[in-house]
Image (tube, rainbow, N blue to C red; front, top):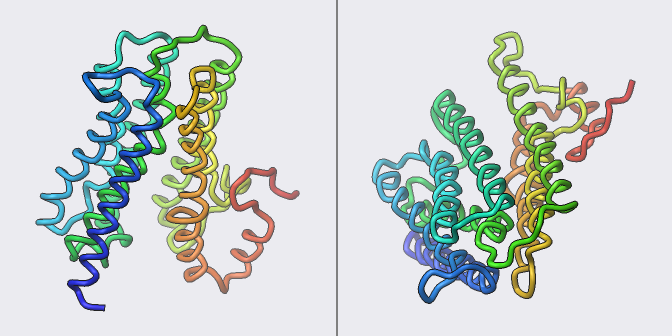
Length: 293
């Protein structure tokens, strides 16, 4: 395939992804707060794409992915701030949802940025950062990722009909806190494992990683599910589209860029190691389970 044809395909993907994100936001936010002629949800989607496209320009010129994950977190922060400013005044549920997303994105953004600074590069971008059109696809997909993932939180913040705090709020908050704790603990355990020189070339199978091969991803899915539970009393009509939030996160992590990529790399590195074979046979891929005694 020629370079020109590949670039045209990439630009077509950019257009399709953008239309999907804007259409989703248009319908999901139809019953929410508006600013002028447009829903706040839709305006937040525009902000998500704008942030990523603006960051893409210097990154493409420098052919660097060092700020990709940082901008991903900045995208969440930007759309949450925009939603709060455009949809206020906020009730307790909205304030809590905004705080949760802010805490999550600052923590994850700092973690991912520090990780790539330590490693020097992200191998996922070795082939695409040298092609401007393919690189633009990655940044556009990141905007779509933020729109879909934060959909339940945006629904809470931009809701025009408020509901008293009740079972769904407290249950959702509890699930979110549990998922966030699992993700943070798993990331810290893996970080400490990698920093220990004696573990060079080894795979982690201790702590939460003895319960699940990907406990951090389980925590990620769990916290966005908690956010959706918090949003349920506020949803109506097309607003129920935000149910796609945890479904999207689950599919992304289990079928696309999360577990499949990591498992392939791990198989190439440790596939012939009997200890690794035993670990993968006895340890759940995602949902934690106490290790066998």
